[in-house]
Length: 268
Image (cartoon, rainbow, N blue to C red; front, top):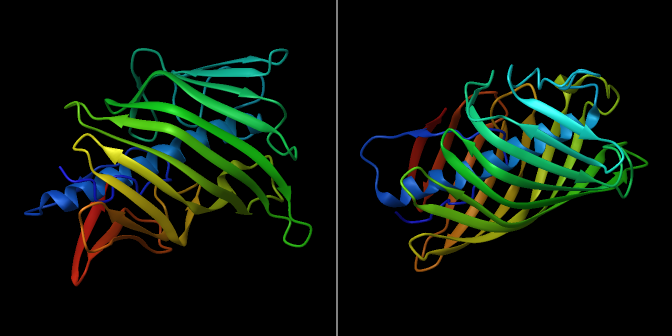
């Protein structure tokens, strides 16, 4: 399988792609979307956990908006938190998670300069294993727009599929809250914009670079990226591959364009 879009990532889940009669390049493009989705998934879970009064109900240990069975443990002295999905947790977003997301932090979610580091312990989403480290730094709030932003550095991130094949990447991006900042107690109206670039490889030895050429927009209330474009260049291929998430409608539709060939895909 080629890498193609082995990294079109940043969303909140691990969607798949329904496709008929397509070549291995397009299948690899879906790998890229998987990566993007996993990154967004992890960031949104931990960001809302950091809020304390958004997805997580204050004083409760259950991760109530995503799962009836995940357990959250906070150590406010050591500044750590774990989100434990156990040996298999059917989450309310239709995905099954298991294992732990581990978080250490130096300050709260809306504290300029605060750093949050995310790692994983035997963490799987729908039997896809997720590994690596994500470091998120609060860049502060813009004085004019009042938008908060965070710098995200992903190091040695890796997704291993049930069949043993994998894609790995490192990235640098900026995640900006463009709406919802006036209602910190209500997570559901939050809207994020992501920009940045990635480099990576896959289990077939293909290397790639990916750039967000149109900012990715993700509403927390939607299960998919609303809009945005990622352009991917793969070693040994003359044409770039473009993953377009759409026009802002909350749906599970996207397109992959290679040269003059356009493929419609359905994410789930």
